[in-house]
Image (cartoon, rainbow, N blue to C red):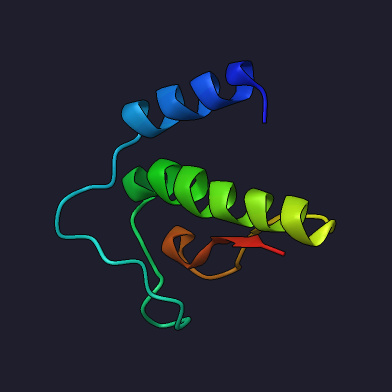
Length: 79
């Protein structure tokens, strides 16, 4: 990874720190989070997923899901 990429990642992690008292859960019932937590989740989980894809020589995709239910049922999936 280049110094430029590392610098940008450090900036993003500082800009979107993990909120105190929030636990990321992978169960569909426990992963629901309010919109203000989404940036740090996407930065940190996305970073881990992208590094894994580099090691495994694979791909990462982002799926934004919408629901006909209330807005809090919408979601983001890393695939």
